[in-house]
Image (cartoon, rainbow, N blue to C red):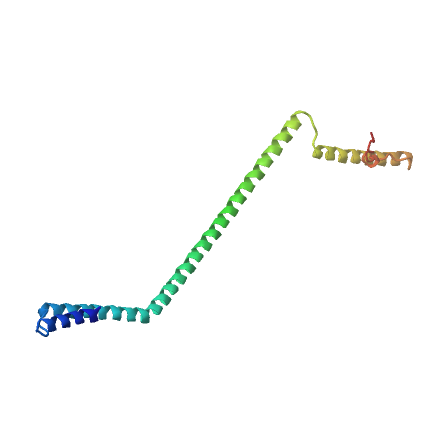
Length: 165
């Protein structure tokens, strides 16, 4: 493009008989300006080629840094969420345990009001029967001089047989 402009300027100068003064001083300054712009563009291109790799590498390093900090933040958030979930699970478990205990107590009181004996009541009565049987055995031995001893009621318990229908 620059060569074409020079060729036109030279052609106009020879046709009119005036060498370089045909376009006047304005044409020469325009040619100089356009040449400087062209050279500036070439210089920017060369610099971009030379420093482009450095800039690219710097951007890659910055990206890696941001990625690692983002991953750390995400991992920290995940750990905090897991800890909170475990805490909530423990709280819920404790609540269920308390609810179960309240329910068992209420059922036991209702059964007691209805006259239904608990396993503890039956165990206590069995122990009393065994103690009374021992006392009777001692009494019989002392009076009869070793007569037939009475077996305790709990010792005579037999397992229930399954009924076949």
